[in-house]
Image 1 (cartoon, rainbow, N blue to C red):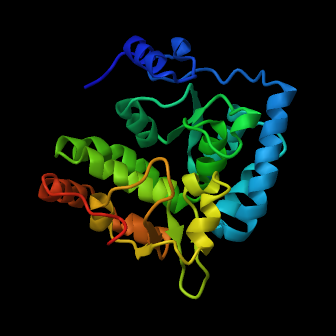
Image 2: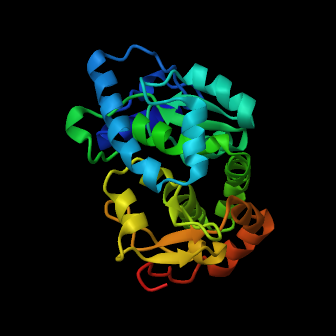
Image 3: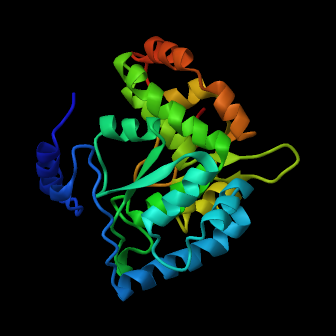
Length: 277
């Protein structure tokens, strides 16, 4: 069911979310309004400097190639400038949003190769943890990997298919697929060490190290049906991380009819425990 911008803004205010939804257009986008203070610029540089020390060692090469192509470390990014570069590489662009937006417009943006990025940045007191996704998570975490054609195609396919899976009773299952790939995905290419590419890991100083390096991290070979059936953690380290052999394998596993079939088959079954799969 679609929700109006006004009703959603009221819900967000009641939940204490900080984004200014009063300026939303009908598709829940806003102007970026590049008027960030020097204090905010310092937070951005501090976050990027600290996280880059880890991503250079633990991130998959496709993410690092994206960072090099876009150049996002020196200052808070100008979304229009980055969109110009992304369009040339994969046909994507980024659009500013005030924070979390409803599922329907989010899927529509992805289906049309637009990635929503929050237009505000966390405070200095929130360097290690923030409840809401902010610009650092959305941009530093998600945007570099959109420079990679195969993953960029997967994200568009996801946006085009999500509503069909939800209609088949698979709302939670399609969310899990996004969570375990775009947010917390790992990759081990043949003959190569384990690396990370998911945005939740790229933007986390502590969980990135845990997911890739800790002997306690539970690594599971990627299987799309298992992924869609497995629960996940919101406010703690994941109890399972799915490992892809390549982005090609992710694209090949993604078929709209199969996802709908999986949703119909398992919608009434108990979810899988990530600690035991």
